[in-house]
Image 1 (cartoon, rainbow, N blue to C red):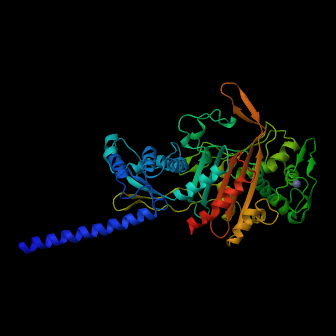
Image 2: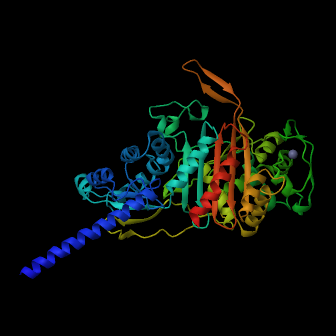
Length: 505
Ligand SMILES: [Zn+2]
């Protein structure tokens, strides 16, 4: 008996010693990864918060553990960081994690409550409250999301949206938007497009706000030209020379112009790389409204898309009046909706799918932000890792030859004299091939609401880039409204693409 007691005592000391060693290890981890780890097993504050709610947690790509309620996440950040940094991080992740309609915490609320399948009458609310929730493992990187948010904010844009994904699988690495939750109390957006909606900061701009596309629309026009080249009398499209005089009078009246003056003689590829409005207006006019519309609808315009099995209530729009003028049609093909009867608006999320389809051989992967669902204790798999799937139906399913042509065009944009040459040379120096299309869309008017005194109308612009990397399957979309520089979107891509590559490597 005495021997057994002694053995138990020794065992206890050994166990305590082991614990001390383990705790020290954890401390090193927390110190090393402090920026990424909003919480860990050592964060007592979070443990009590989460335990009290019994809810599951969100585990980001880095393994960082986030509470499933926005308020708890904010409190945990404020407990760990200075107020400004905490607010930045909360702003960055708010819409992708906690958006009340499309945030992963909302879309996965059943699992966070410990339900594998659907709620039923048997579940009962009280049982849900005491039930232990599952942890939801995300494909989202919170560190990349925070970097992306800071890059958007640095553009000085009044509103912006950006999303980064893996085009080979569909997993989303990061998405975020400006303004975000830190404006706190209700802020009424000064911009006309938001009038009928909620407060500006509540809008999930990647999934629910469309912007005028500007020249990124030339992707759709170029694909239509490639498909119908024989119909429009340009069977040898790659040998045609377009001559840009800087402006073009359209049949029936109205002038198309190129912002930076005369482009001179251009091949089709050069017209795309340098974003020549005159060449693309001419092409759009030759194509006519039916062919352009048909191509756009196949590419996902005017179509419902889903995010994590939920239908998105906004779509990219392309609508032309029945008797469209050459002037309006030409500008539409170049990316500007110039008359009030033309609808031309694009959704950042849709643009990621389109870019991804081109990069991925023609077929768009269905995006997803949740990898799997596991038990909180032990991480046993409840719902296995999601398998990549394609967007179903005819939407966003190009044939491989057209996709290859579009890839070559987008690579030329990152080549010498292309509008994203700076991105191309930077990526090249790192050993990668970038492909892109940039866009600058002018608003006819931007209406700023004056405190109950009517509106002040001014001109505004959107800066866009859609881009991808050939060697590593990263695709990215940035839309920034009224940034301080025309190259705002390119600059965001230059900063974020290398980081996204690191995340995937
Ligand atoms: Zn031109």
